[in-house]
Image 1 (cartoon, protein in one colour):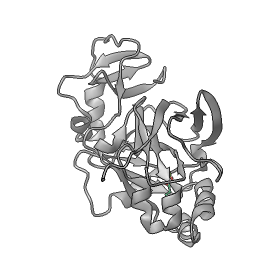
Image 2 (cartoon, rainbow, N blue to C red):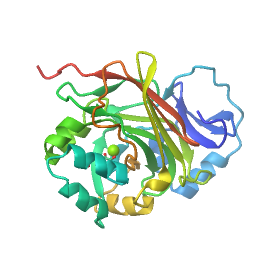
Image 3 (cartoon, helix red, strand yellow):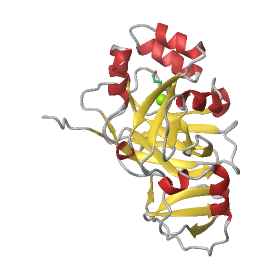
Image 4 (cartoon, helix red, strand yellow):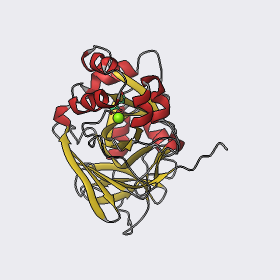
Length: 284
Ligand code: DO4
Ligand code: MG
């Protein structure tokens, strides 16, 4: 959890606010659903109220900052993502086109039941041979698609399935435990997403086997532009979460394995760390 700033988090099952290191507890009926149904101004009004400090014990469980929100994702928003798709795909043409087109690539990523919080197990598919984490800045929006805040997202993906045919994208992207989110939402009026470092570290049997970093300054799309397309002809009654694309893709000879640990840090948003487990076939 970041030491400074203004963050909303689910701690020990209840929604807490952390202001410059001091925790307070929101009323019992507060949820991400109820808070994201408010306008940005209404939310600020609620969160600005004076509250007594709350004790949060060391090691308290921090859950994913999400209730009923859908998670959507943008793709090919960084040059590195474009290069990686060109490497894996049967044709790089759709990726080249979408990188420079006016309309961004946006896809449905997860229902809240497919999302995992800090420390929870994320999954790779049983029918995939080439899997990667995708460390991404996640934008949390309210029902009016106003940006309420930012958190860390992990768009776990199958490169073998997407690489075989881009029409398989939903299968490469959506499955149980396909998306990590958390630890906390940095509130938009106190946090700027510009020029934030994004760091990825992957550990296997206790050793670091891959480490890389990028910056949000390398993104090719503006967040309002992505939200403009996301909000066309659809409503999000309790808001939504949008992952903004990856700027880090490990080299082509790398694949995640069962037992790996993926750690993502974004400057000002903290650390999202999850163990990885390979699914056993569940439909047989
Ligand atoms: O086009 C496929 C997915 C791209 C993606 O998830 C990303 O760039 O982060
Ligand atoms: Mg992605």
